[in-house]
Image (tube, rainbow, N blue to C red; front, side, top):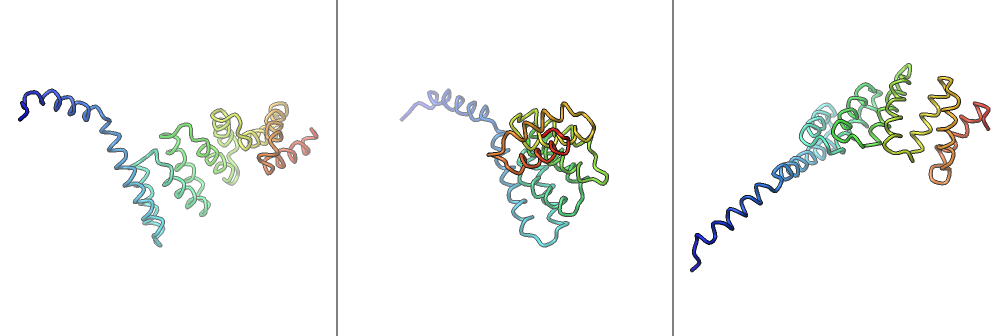
Length: 186
C-alpha cells in the first residue's frame, strides 16, 4: 500500500493546477452555453418582446459572444429602430473592440437615421477601416461621406481603394465608380 504522505505533494500540485486553470474560462464556457441556449430559445419564440429580452440576457451572460447581438441587430433593423441597432453594436464593440462588422453596422445604422447622422457614421467607418485597412466597404463609405462634405482629395483616395478591388467585391467597386463619376474623377 502506498504511503499517503507521498501523495500529499501530488494532491497539492493537482489542486494548485486546477486552481490556476482559469476557473473563469470554465465559467465563461458555462456562460457561453447558457447564452447559446437563450439565443436558441429566443429564435424559436413567437413572442418577439420575450425573445428580445432573452437575447439581451444572453448579451449580459456572455457579452463577447456575438450571436445574440446579430439577432438583436436584425430585429431592431427590421423595425427601423436604428437607435437600438446602435446600442446593440456599441455593446458588442465594448467586449469585442476588433469586430469590424459591428463598427460597420453602427455606421450603417447612423446612415439610416432621418436625416442621416453622417458625422457619427464616419467615426465608425473610420474605426472599421483602421482595424481592417483592406475593407473596401469601409473605404467606400468613408469616400462617399468625404465627397458629400466636400473633402475631394481624401474622398478620391478612399474611393480609389474601394474601386481597386472589383474582382473581390464588384458591388463596392461599382458604387465607388459611380461616386467617382459623379465627382468628375472618372
